[in-house]
Image 1 (cartoon, rainbow, N blue to C red):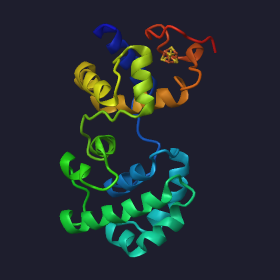
Image 2: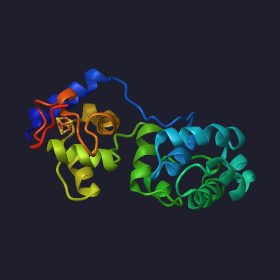
Image 3: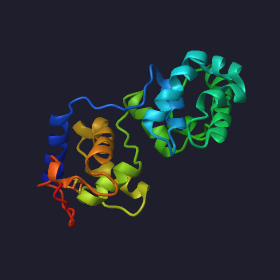
Length: 211
Ligand code: SF4
C-alpha cells in the first residue's frame, strides 16, 4: 500500500469520527489503568458493568487496597480471569502507593513494571490518559492493519513499528481508536462487512464480502 492511500484511509476514518475514544468508562488515569487491566479477554461492555461498583467502592489506589483481593473479586467475578485480575489489581495498587505516591506514572517503563501491564496496556494508558502518540496493537488493530495491507506484519510488535513509521504525525494520537472501532464493528474477525465499509475502495484485502 502506498502512502497516499494510507493518508486517504486515515482522512476518511477521521471524517467519520473526528474525536474517537475508548469504549471503556473511566474518569481519570487510575480508572483507565484498572479498566484496561480488566479488559484482557473480556468485552468493554462487561468491564464497564463491573467497574460501576468497583470504582464507587475503590475510587483511588488506597481505597482499592482497602477492598482487598476478595473485595475486588466480588465486583469483577462476571469477568473472565477474575481471580488473577483481582490479585493484579491489588498488587498494582500497592506499587502505585509505594512507588508513585498513589498516582499513575506517565512513564512507559514504570507502567510496564506493574503486574498484568504489558506494552499494549502501557500504550493505551499513555495514549488515552496522557495524550502520547502511542499505538496499542490489539487483535482488532492487528487484523485491520494486515487485511487492508496498511501495515502488514506477523507479530503485534511488527505491526506497531510499521504503524508508527507510516501513520503521519497528525493522525497518530487517534489511529489506535479508529482501527479498533473499525475492527470491532466493520472489519470484524469472522466475516468483514466490506459492503458497508467506508474504506472499501482503498483496502487491498483480496476476499472482500458483499454485505
Ligand atoms: S473492505 Fe472489508 S476487509 Fe477491507 S477494511 Fe473494509 S471491511 Fe475490512
